[in-house]
Image 1 (cartoon, rainbow, N blue to C red):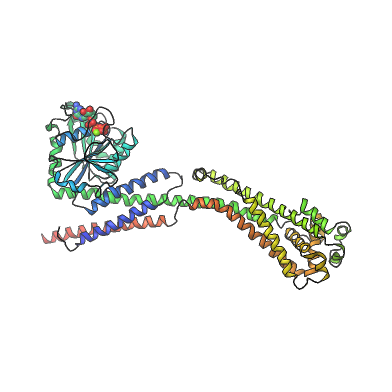
Image 2 (cartoon, rainbow, N blue to C red):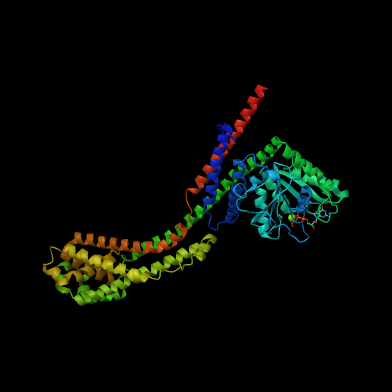
Length: 590
Ligand SMILES: Nc1nc2c(ncn2[C@@H]2O[C@H](COP(=O)(O)OP(=O)(O)OP(=O)(O)O)[C@@H](O)[C@H]2O)c(=O)[nH]1
Ligand SMILES: [Mg+2]
């Protein structure tokens, strides 16, 4: 072939090829993993679209002069294989009594056209074979002089097969056809499945010819009249309709040539007329591209539904864990930790008795005296630390369990979340196995941090009698107690036993560091605890979020799908405008 400067037509088709390759990538790349309503259908549609782009649209666009591929499709036992054999004039594909018969597609072409049908060019998913294999993953190629150059005939499996593999393959082959030779029989022509296919063909303006096969001679007029009306009503008025009467087959299973003569000569004249052939190809190809671009918006909608569901599932998790963090923060400051062991050990440390009897009336006076009353006892300070550690751990653990349960329950309440939990293979409804250990470490680190805070704050006070009286340990447990009563309104008349205990801590610290410093230290210690709890909970939250992130749902998918579809449409409109301009220019010349 001699090199030619690219004409505007080849430039435009090159742009269209690029746009369709992008469309293929965008479709293949979009993640539709969540089981939202309609997802299964959308995944199927997406698969068919990708297949059609690879099997037919792209190869056809790149090799616009390739032979016209006629796919013979229809219901099981309609007589497709018999028809193909009769058209070719010899037994190239097995007809049969057992249904379904044809499992492996057979493509019959003129010997001169052989190069057009290798695997690199069309239907790349099917291995090529020169002989019958019965393998649905193989395409048998048969060369025959009885098939005109420029036109090939493919015998497909049944569209309504009991075998799914057959149905899927039949649909894939029809999607790769330039022309459908759709075979139905007098007995079956009103069936639903064939009409679903024909409707899809009409929607996509696929070129279709109908063969009404195996019709008793005396019923031909009536049945074909009825069928013609059905075709008209379903948007296929322009499709040629051929009737083949029920006649005996010879020992090779072939019908006498005169019975298929009409179809044969129609196909022959189509093959001979390059303009007519190009028109058929263009009709089907344009229809396929238009339909692909339209359906891309459905897939974009589906991608949007995925995103909405993923967002909802993410919010479920965030709500559960944010609430856990908030509740722990509340509970660690509203006095609720000043109970049980913590309270008992603290009281042991600071002593009770007279101090508390005087509290209500003598809060102001207390500050100066408290140091005198309370005796720092290192052993007891240590016990308070241990009690605080276990109280905090229990609090954190409880909320981690609750958050895990809540997140799981809200996922379980929708099918998409339910399946995600099943597929994750993890027990997300409980806190992580090592959570207790991590919580312990975290609480101890916090306590250590509090100790450091007190140590730093007291750097220049280390030698004062008050500081020495309680030591860093005693003052830091006091600070923890103050944190635990931070929001409890512990002052003056509101004090209860627990509050009273906190007041002692407060006064003690104030006596050493001053009011302002105590407020600052308590706020910092509380903040530090909150940060550590947040880290712990975020690690727990991540288990769920990893499941979501692993799905590959990309917020950009919706827009990129719509953008590639628009690009295809723009090129379609521009190209159809160009055809129109060319036609107009030709009109002027004439
Ligand atoms: N007498 C007669 N028998 C026919 C005719 N067409 C098909 N048959 C018989 O009907 C049976 C099925 O025909 P096939 O050509 O295998 O049908 P098919 O549509 O290819 O069937 P599948 O491959 O299963 O989808 C075979 O036994 C054929 O011999 C016909 O026009 N006349
Ligand atoms: Mg068959």
